[in-house]
Amino acid sequence: MMVNHPEHAPITQFPIHDNCLVIGGISLARLAQRIGSTPFYAYDRQLISARVQSLRQHLPANIHLHYAMKANPMPAVVQHLAGLVDGIDVASTGEMKVALDAGVAPEAISFAGPGKSRQELACAIAAGIILNVESEYELETIAQLAKETGFQASVAVRVNPDFELKSSGMKMGGGSKQFGIDAERVPAVLQRIAQLKLDFEGLHIFSGSQNLRVEAIQEAHEKTLQLGLQLAAVSPVPVRTINIGGGFGVPYFPGENPLDLGAVGNNLQHLLAAIPVRFSTIRFIIELGRYIVAEAGIYVCRVLERKISRGQVFLITNGGLHHHLAASGNFGQVIRKNYPVAIGNKMGINDTETVSVVGPLCTPLDLLADRMALSRAEPGDWVVVFQSGAYGLTASPVAFLSHPAPLEVLV
Image (cartoon, rainbow, N blue to C red):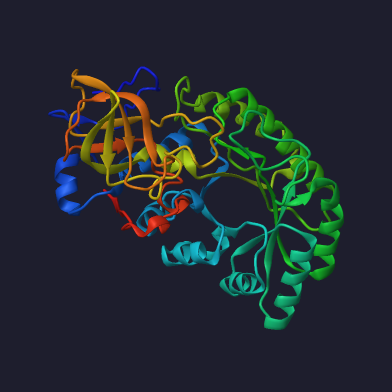
């Protein structure tokens, strides 16, 4: 059965049995009992595997697929994905440790992000992972640390292109950015890498994220490959890899529809087929986080009270923005829009009412659903927020007001 709120794209990935949501083959009621408390996040491992399989099916066979751990760094999720993808991209030494503990080969781990400390750089060099260099200062620091420790440093250059991913939910390239080295400075940086005799891996060009427009992603792929090959042509050291970033979006809000992955893959196939033979040894990487895990996860909290204030019904729950900042609208939304939300133990019931779902925090920002049509709920029922597998728990201010942190399970 499909969860179909008229204001949202249908949620079809989870079965429903006896009006109860099923995740990972377990009914929500049984899973909640197994976990023992709410709120919690639950991630469906089969849905994660299916998404990777779909990417393998639709993207060119010679594309290497990397998982951007920042989307969901839960160790069990990373462990599961370690056997499915070709590499892991991390953004801290904490994430690096999770990837290494999951058995990912150091040479398949890359570390991106501005402002890496000397200690972080030293840890990464000792681990043997690839450092995505974000500035010329960082490059010199890496070279100095490599000389001091005697360990070979593996580096790639993160490029700040002179274009952006149009219609992107979060623009990561183009114009002045804290990310990467401006494209016009990269040839000189490549010359410096050759002088420093660092182990050079390649280029990382990331222009934006959360995009559902095929035409925008196609244009970004074309420009990214063009720029990458232009830089490879003038590089004094061989370019082994070009990471063309990600940007694949998932539908969250009214009017949004799933990305046409087939169209993206077909266009990328044509672009790669046209690459000159002299670049045939370069490996091309797509780095995805949200697209792999977002739709496989749910956030579950429990209704504590039904409250009516001047005719408006509020479902007061034990969850909220401290656990799921993005669903509250406080993680990048300009105009707040509702995530897909449902009463997880009353799926498909026609007895609906318009309610607002709020949490227990002393702020009006603690809002999970604003005037949504949901099945009539009572204290003890479960509120489910879909599309919650990415940028959920670790992107939220869990310490705010000192409420207990939610649990996470992979089922």
